[in-house]
Length: 428
Image (cartoon, rainbow, N blue to C red; front, side, top):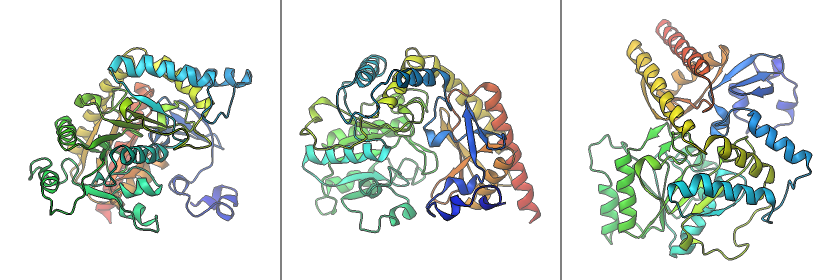
C-alpha cells in the first residue's frame, strides 16, 4: 500500500520529497483526541509518538482546549512579537510560581522563536557572547536541531550532511556509556582541556541531553551528569541542558536534570511547553548571563500568545502539585517490567531496552528489524518511530496522560509486533 492508493495525489504532486513521517504511516489523519489519532475513514491509532514529544498531555486536551477557545472567542491577541500582553504575563507569572520558585531556579526567561532549534541557537549564541569564545562541546549521538548552529553540535552524519556547508566551532566527546564503561568518565575530555597541545580551543560551553531521544534513548547516569557539571565549573565552561524533548515531565520531574541535582547555566525547552502542540520555545539562563542588547536575538513568531494560553493552562492543571510526576514514575516501572519480560521471553532478536519516565527504547540488532516492528505495529493500530544512528531502536513516547488501559494496550501491540517480526525473520 502506498500513499497514492489511499490519499489525494496532491501529497505527492505538490508536497516536497522532504516529507518523512507520512511515509511510515500512509493514511490521512483527520481527528485526534487524547491518546488516539483517527484517519479520514474513522480508524483509530493509539499514539505512542505524541508529536515527537510535543503532546505530553495528549491530543486536544479538553482543559487546554477550553482555555484556548475562550481566549480566541474573546478576541485575545494572537500575534504579538515580543510586546507585553496579558497572555504572556499570565504565563510568566505561572511559570515562575509553579516551575521556577519551587525548584529555587533563578532563571530569566527568553522567547527565542517557535521551535526547539531556535532555543538551541539562542543558547549557543548567548554562551559565545558571554564568554567571548567560539567552541561548543557536544556528545556522540546528540541531536539538537536542524538549523546550522544546532547541526554543528549534532552527531548524526545524515542530518549533518544536509547542511551543505562545513559545520564549525564544535567538538564532540563521548556520551555516557559510549565507551562501554572501559574508560573513566571524562578522561579524554579532561586530558584535552589540560593539554595546550591538544588542539581543543577552550570551550565556551558544553551542551547535553540527559536522555538522547533521536540518538537512540541513551540515558545519562545521574552521577555522570553531576561529573559533567563539576567539570564545567572547574574549567569555566557554561553547561547547557537541551530539554526540548525530555522536559515538561517526560522523565517524571518537570526538568529531566532534576534527578541529578544539578543546575545548568542555560536550559532549552520547546515541544510540550505549550501543552497543546502549538509552536513555542524557551531559553532559560542565569540572570548574570542576560547580556543581550534589545533586539539582538529576535524573531517574528516569538510571541505566540495562543501558546502562552495553553502553556499556562497546562502548568495550572498538571504542575501545581506532584500528581503527574508520581503517576509518570509509577508508569515507568510498568513499562520497564513489560519490556524486561518481552526481552526475556524472546531471545531471537537480540533485544535490549532502556529509558526513564515515559521515554523508552527497545533496541534491535539492526534497523531493518526495528522498522519491521514499527510497520507491524502500524498495521495493528499503534504509532511508533525508530531512533538511533542506524534506526535500530524502537522509541516509545506515549502521552503522559494515557490511561493504564491505553498503556497496556500499546505495550501489548508492541509485544505482538516484536514476535511477528521475529517469526518473519526466522522464516526468511
